[in-house]
Amino acid sequence: MVELVLFVITAVAALAGAVTVVTARNPVHSAMGLFGTLFSLAVIYVVNLAHLVAAVQVIVYAGAVMTLFLFVIMLIGVDKAEDTSEHLPRQRTLVAVLGAAVGLVVVALIVSGRFVWVPAGGGDVEIPNGTVQAVAEPLFTTWILAFEVTALLLTIAAAGAIALAYFKRGLIREEHE
Image (cartoon, rainbow, N blue to C red):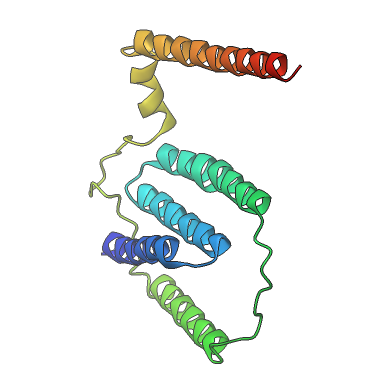
């Protein structure tokens, strides 16, 4: 039951963030909607016991990619003056009431003793589907050749891109001289 409630809450949050990405006029608001969506997906991964995938989701996408997006937005320049007046006068009160309600539900579950976290698979079975060991074991045994070939291919592609950029820059300098 707890998984269902968490799934519904995070699914609604992910959808709200996705709608914000598409409908926001301000690029910073759009980026924050994307951050909310990515974070909600990480929570869904945790509920499904895919902790490694959730950590990668937060570190790589919600961390690095969002930082890159925000730097690009800053470089492009959003130089419009923002209207800082509050258009929703009861928004802070509503958020405080909702936060208190969620807090009360959590406290009530803890005090009642009826809160039991059951893994997504149910029962007493340990499900290592998202742990580091569960991902690393087949990656470095069964798929080691494909892993190393992919690493080599990406290294060659990066070196080739640098070489092409340097070669093109050299041609452009020669044309201007």
